[in-house]
Structures are given as structure tokens and as C-alpha cells.
Length: 107
Length: 121
Image (cartoon, rainbow over all chains, first blue to last red):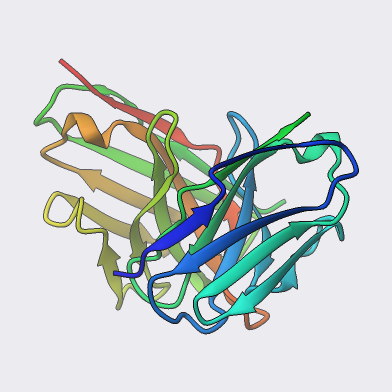
């Protein structure tokens, strides 16, 4: 099975900060990676697919990059509504594993 | 509006069974592969199971293999998860999620609101 390791697991940043979350795969997954945002008590919402394709409805503050085993999600200028947990997921092969999640707190 | 609505969660004793349902509306359900994903309290997301739109491909996480069965009824626009031999570690919010590869890149682009399953005596 492909393992995804997200880092950090928690971060605290100020409004306006540039924030980067990384996701490392235990083996190459090409660009078959998605990023999700989840707010407390709500279902996840997809932000990015294919490592770098911004989904319709997602803010342009979000961008993704990477391929193979190293991926990142960047929030260009953190806003209060970005307080959430972010999850990466590989869709390269079964099982469709998720990373452990990164909780973003606004300072 | 494209929507997924889960039902069937509740409290069940260890060793018991439960059947979850997911009702789809607002899109052509029979065109999409579907998944179940769960989230234990305070924990991350765990993919549970997948079924293709034509029912020809089915996959399970090792943690549920042999105990859970995924199925769908395209005529009823419904997805199901039969859960047997439930354990305390199966306690979680269970989400149904649509896999969309329409534009090339795949993702789980539509999720239900989730249904809570609690396994406890």
C-alpha cells in the first residue's frame, strides 16, 4: 500500500502569511494526488486534483505542485476562512490512501 | 443540485451489523464510481471501499475486508455499505463520496454529510 506522510500535522500562522503543507508518498504516484479542505463538522471539499489543477469553486489562493513522491499545497495569503484541516489523497492505486491531515490555526 | 445523502448510522453492539445507504440526486449516478470514506472521532480520513459504475470493480481497505460489502442500485440511485462483525474501531462518521475523472484528473468531488456509526456495548 502507498503511505502518505503530511507535514506539519499542525501549524499556526497569521492572516496574510504564505503557508505551505507537504505530502510525501512512499512510492511514486505520478500526479495522482488531490488536496481537500475540511472544516469542523463538515465533509471534505476538494481543492486541487492531479497535484496542481485548481477545482472549480476553490479560491485562487490555493495552489498545488509536485509529482512522483513529493507534493505541496500552498496558501498564498492566509485568510480567516482558511482555518481548517487539509488532507492529501493518492488516487494512483488501491487503497486510495489519505495523509494524516494538517490542522491550520489562524494566529 | 448534485447531492449525496447518507443514512443508516447509529449505535450497535460489538459483533453486530448495520447497513448504510447513500441516496444520490442531481446527477447521473450510473455514470460515476463511488466510495465510502470514514473518519474516526478526532482522526484523519480513511478510505473504506470503492465500486465502479458498472459494478465490475470492487475494492476494500484491509481493515474491513471480509466484514463489509459495498453495493449499488443504479436504478434507485443508491449506494450501500453492509457492515458485519462490527468492532469498536469501526466507530466513525461514514461518508459516501463520488469519484470524478470527467475532466481527466480524478478526485472525490462530491461528498455526503456523513452518518455516525458508534460501536459500543
